[in-house]
Image (cartoon, rainbow, N blue to C red; front, top):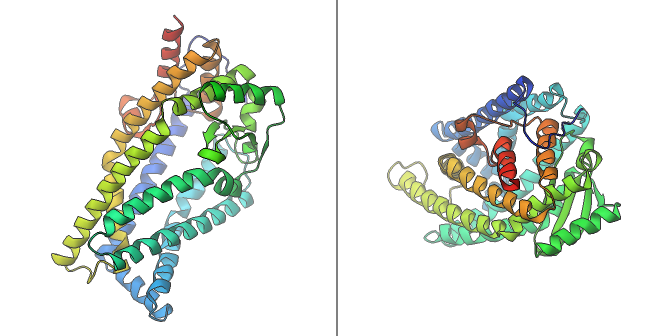
Length: 378
């Protein structure tokens, strides 16, 4: 793949990039609609109640085991319904020459992803209904506090537990680049526990980098596709942006925002559950786990309504991180060239329409980021 190295401007989106991103958006919309319809059908037809009864029979009337069986039946239904879209997405990456992954590897990743999801979903749902049974009046506030704790825990252990399930990592062997990035992190006030090479090329031709983890798991990960095609100055610019999130405390702020949204979600879920029980007589008790699709439906609707606001907040954070990058690197040129290379290599849209950026994009358009860099340089 030829990578553009344009230091002063951005070129227009190619028809290929527009077509690729348009298809990806429609795939995302189709997946969301399919999930929404599944939840509605489960509730409207009382299939959720039928699955609950089946779980009770299979679990020998043991509540805890029945909850596990219910989750173990519900998740495969969703997976089977969405497997066609997942496979089309896999083929799409090959169609646009963005993937190196073979079909066997993709199937293995899908299996691992399903098993990881099953384990995590089982733990979360078991805890949820245990709390509902123990404290039906205050379950939503207790569960909210527990979920925030789990969210922080997952952010900490993901780099050392979850990521290696799907990708290979090894310490970066380029000592000069490693020390350069570590010093950059020290200037940003964060102690980096390691710099790792991320073997992304085994599956994708796209490039990426990240500052992941919390506390003792804080580490820099650099995709080999980035290391192979970008200069040290460009890699430093990419990482300086990531460190900007640390300097502006975006992780802590995002956790606070997520805590507020989650609290609102659990409050709404509690109100909807009581309405479903008291007014609609859909369930006998709060602890009837057949109401799980209703809880998921409340979460889905709330997430949809808040998505534009959350994306706007994310874009604001990204602009702040960019400005920190501008102040931290000797020259703006490597930032601009890295943005253009990333757009070419990842087939990203440089200038999406306003409504697409408003609703779908968590990052500002690349054209706007480059213009901001040029304005800073002047």
